[in-house]
Length: 115
Length: 113
Figure 1 (cartoon, each protein chain N blue to C red):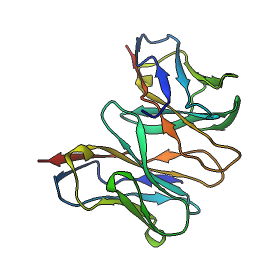
Figure 2: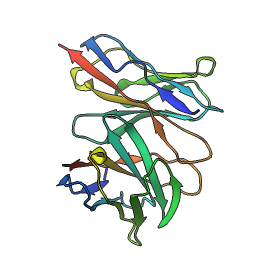
Figure 3: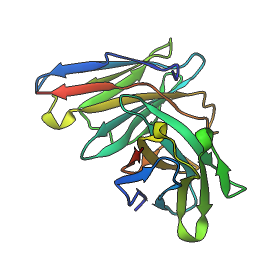
């Protein structure tokens, strides 16, 4: 158990809909990262938040957005869903301060199925 | 372009045999290098990482990896594989100056009894 929790575990929805994925980082971790794992694209970094502020952006679509709240939990919002958005979405957290590297601890993921 | 390549999609080894999983990267400068393992239905777990210094790094579960600058490689090894090592293994790289972690496509390891 990494200490990172993600809800829900599974999500099934229809094209055009909007969903919210939730992540609670390990206690004390200030950074949260979101990743997408799909069969055709592999594992891709989407976005990072550090202490409530966006820190880095990867291959995140404009239909997707994220935020980190004062209690440090994060939400990933996916809108206008397409079949190709079906994937496993991982959240990771780290104790990162400044630009020094700290190990990222991954949650168990949320499996999103778009029908 | 920056990239991470894991040439082997699927590898099968017998229990007790040695293992080497390959990883090559293409970056402007030597990035931070990592190996992660993903068991079915689980998130990723860090096996080991290389930042600088000794090019042979030891990780958890008996794994080690060797960084070879001349070959832009960071291959993962284990001298004797256990059935519980069956999983998917990901090589990842991250530049020193940002948080954009790039993962390879993964290598699925099957362990025969």
